Length: 423
Image 1 (cartoon, one colour):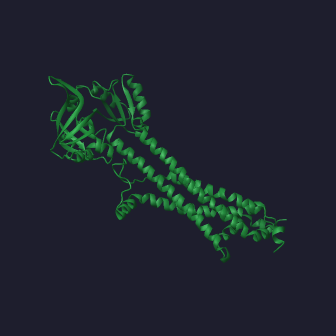
Image 2 (spheres, rainbow, N blue to C red):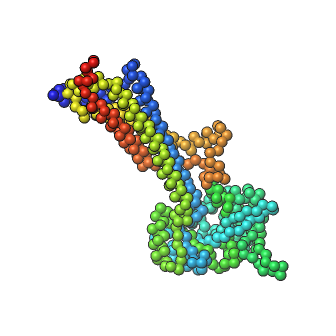
Image 3 (spheres, rainbow, N blue to C red):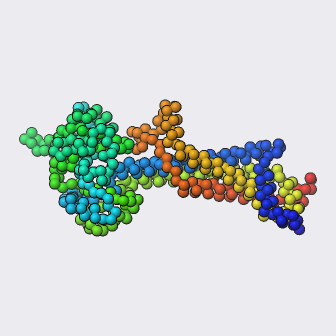
């Protein structure tokens, strides 16, 4: 029969005993050490998971921002890579609800030469007065102005890394070599044109800073022999995350005479790679949290072995098997909750300050974790997303509670008669 006192104190008693078992006596110091390692293991795993996912989120956001700083949200081109009457199409596109800006462009692959240095380059013809509507290159200029690109003067703006590679500066001249050729009495010769360097830009993404140059769109049309046409029209939308739906609506309205694509298709490989890495890192680090959580099993098994006498006495006083399980679930839950809280706080603090901590470590040890010529981004960004924090904390607590079930069940199966026979 259950004691009335036990019945009245059922829920508080489970919590009270569970909390009491977290405090060590002198003879159970080793158990307390194992408990401490379990707490620290969970805390470190949660901290690492929050920090790494925040860095991955920051990397994705930086990558998206820098790519879209040089490319458009939506691109309209002709069926054969040439677009006629871009002015009429731009006016028509601006009438759509979500379109904020439109600008023409001409793209081409060329070789650029300066003295003895040669480099393959993407040459892009832009209209300076409209380019600021669809890209941020105008505000990324380190030397000169985008407005220095004047039609007919054959001026050029280089990416900063490209200019360093060629060894040129403002006022120097470079030679553009196009894939088109000229037929002369001396034979077939490549088309060459000298350009004046009037500016340099730096968007912070090595792919663009090293492999892109800008000229006026009229000069590009003459160079590639497509005037008065252009390669296409670039659009800026009010919601870049809704670009696929808006782009599909544009395509339906414009018809089959044009090719309409959005940034998610043009750069899908980058963002798929980031998402894949993020999922893999989440799984790997979650396994670390799982290993730390299941250390609770060994901790509780040792506690159950040490407290067999206490459990037997409590059961003789009327404590039921579910109540015994509840005691050890509370004990394991406290260990998991403590580790999760410590890890969550540590992860949040580290994620919010990683952009300060990493440069300090690089400066102190003279290393660079992300070289600009290897990675797209040379700094370690961080973007804390609270949804990730909630999921990580919840999964850590669930794993901790699951780890308590087997030891708690074993404790509930203790037979008081067998234990107290030799007491």
